[in-house]
Length: 406
Image (cartoon, rainbow, N blue to C red; front, top):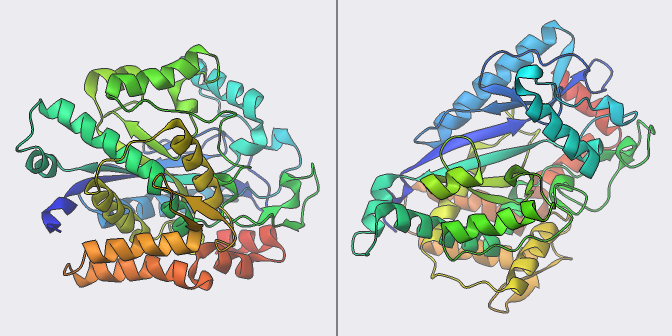
């Protein structure tokens, strides 16, 4: 493996909820003016958007800096940054205020009202992390050296092939970053605050209870226009209001604001991985090794032989992602397009072993990252979800609030 292939660009997005002294979602207006800290669904759900960086650590450093600034500012008004993907106490849906963008951007508020009506505010209270990655132009130029076609067309083809590989194997990232096994009972039963609920999931937001549409999307990977058209069809059928409503663990995105028009006209700029949970075991909510592993994973996938996916394969891919959100990975099955079937632990371990072989002879840092992730499959106690369940039960919200204040 040529380590020059590891040249790339990172951008991170992290959502959290603001909470008050008592562990309820804050009802105050969004207090941040920095353009890197925006609202997500809720007025009480700030989202950090980092700049784009040529290495994972720089992106993590910026995320950490904004995270600390937010905590410092919130403490002055008696609020805290909730450090989990799963929400704290919820008395009723009105505890989750819809983001108010004012008259100037009223369409953003209306879109969130649409989401609230279609999915309910409770589901919108989950928070997560998106890892954005693009391969450096020099890496792609080297790959395309002996291929016919424009750089733009070849790049789009490259990312479409990568997206297909992510449909096959992306569930591995869900297994490795799941960090939301506990809910407050008030998420399940209206107003019943203060009891813990465990439903057998390591990541509730990535499970059947989490961010999924009411249909299984099927994509056309023939070219970028066909891919965009396959999403547009769901908009035309009123299954989606806009492309951003497609709740899928992987997105191909253009540079700048996301739209199908921009994707068609400008092509793919980067891939967005949307399955990462907020990790309360890390001060900034994200372990840098997971970001570095995501890059290693993408580079490895890009070198696999192209895969053709049937409709059945794409339906199975969604089930694999949902299965990977389970707490006990020895009890759920994964099925790959080539017919391979096995537990998530067995196939996940095999994927990591293939990656270790691929990266043999590279730096000790890379070897350490691969061992760190492999050990999550080797010993369930190394998984974030298992550690969090032991640390934060019983009394999930009470203990979470202590952590938030610390």
